Image (cartoon, rainbow, N blue to C red; front, top):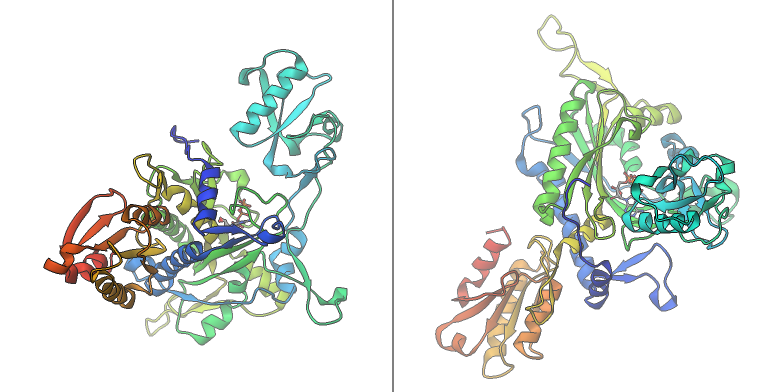
Length: 528
Ligand code: ATP
């Protein structure tokens, strides 16, 4: 809650636009949907691809857009594409089989299930007898609802100052008996927190016996660690370097919600950056800054983005002194005035490689010829070590959701009432070409220009053309789809070879030469 400006956009309106314009649909919608799963429609699929492509371009093809690392040298990153299903021992080594559990509580009255670590509870200050706790989730609405319930129970109007708040997990079993769940009427309906394994189980092979159990990966990261040696042995990379991967991950989340924010199937974009232990703090700082800047430059430059350094008690078990963890967070309409995580940047020490070395018996140490004491010939003797790791781990679907929320711009002066202010780099439709009317030679000129733009820019996104309805309605459609530029062929085009360009953000129009359209668009898309 670092900024006073709340994100007041309506999530219902954003979700309605996503459905109406084909960005996001409920998965299996004609069968009533399936909780925690979402499909992308034509515009959403392209938006998601554009965001993934931008990440791939700026991480793998041209790491950090040429910015050198803290060692002054170009940053080196190579990709892998590993399987969703791995040997189950991978997940034992990583700690996911034993430890990937979220404690959860069930409400016997409402049948709702909550993550215990997401629930807070409140009670009256100084009230040590016969207390009742109303459980709240960590947001303002549920705080207000809980306060109301508690006031009603205590028969007095309570304010924030009258109450104490503590984490649900801090309560004893007896105290649980006098609790009211966030949506329940009765006290004592919440179960004790129980562990819940988040990995989806499946069976490999035909027999489906317990020996054949396998898991859908809950993160892409482990597919990188288990290939570390392969990559070192088969390429010319040397520490420091990174391995990057994008792909699906699956978690049987206890409470999927907030649209695509917490889904059971989602896509990650992860980097494991391997470096010498002594260099880890500098690389951690580098990646922290770099990843924040990237999200800002891709269209989240406003005050809804923040970097939050984790408190010491939040740090994962593998994080050691001198390391740290931070999240890039976005203020979604449903988290406002709070923030939700988009990407975690974590110092993981040598934890993962060490775990895999121990569990597999493979030698995963790296022989660094640039380090160690100097030999008589003046050359370093080399040093053998397990590299330490900085992990920038981003959620692609959460990125898309943040971009959708940020782009959503109500504007009562427009026919559409709203436009999607996508950064041109991620906009699913890059441009539209319209004949003003569908006659008098205009459709032919439009078709030629459309074909030229598709040839030149079609690999970046859709180039639309449309002759139906009034030009105002066509602009309105493009506003809702977030198309940055519309080019209209009209009567004047046929006389003086100029076209109208309409700018999505200002709705202003200017005339440019027909043969300058390609160069104009290239410049605006940043590829001129
Ligand atoms: P959370 O605390 O929100 O559950 P996490 O800290 O467990 O997230 P990580 O394991 O660090 O998340 O995963 C890296 C990224 O993957 C997150 O920053 C997020 O963008 C994305 N992610 C994780 N879980 C989900 C999910 N259930 N749905 C969509 N994206 C997710």
